[in-house]
Amino acid sequence: MGRHDEFTRATSIPVFFCDPGSPWQRPTNENTNGLLREYFPKGTDLSIYSAADLAAVAIELNDRPRKALGWQTPALHFSRLIATVE
Image (cartoon, rainbow, N blue to C red):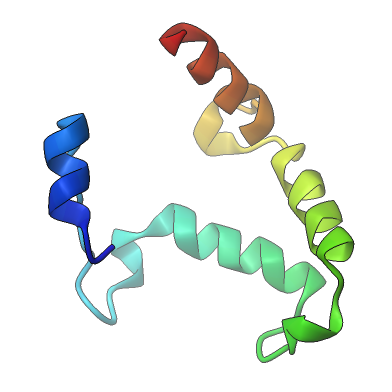
């Protein structure tokens, strides 16, 4: 996010950077890392997977309900957010 200042000016959305070594400041990121490790153990060389393999995992994760979203799937939640912007 080398251009975070431009993003903030263009969108009026502030960018927050977590402190190094403070995973409690980024719980969604840490949860997602845990979910990804169900498919790819830590240290896995992702270059051995095709784009289709990675896309299949992304689709599975985006169709998995999340407590943080009121048990909606990320895909459904995102589509509803986009619908309110248009």
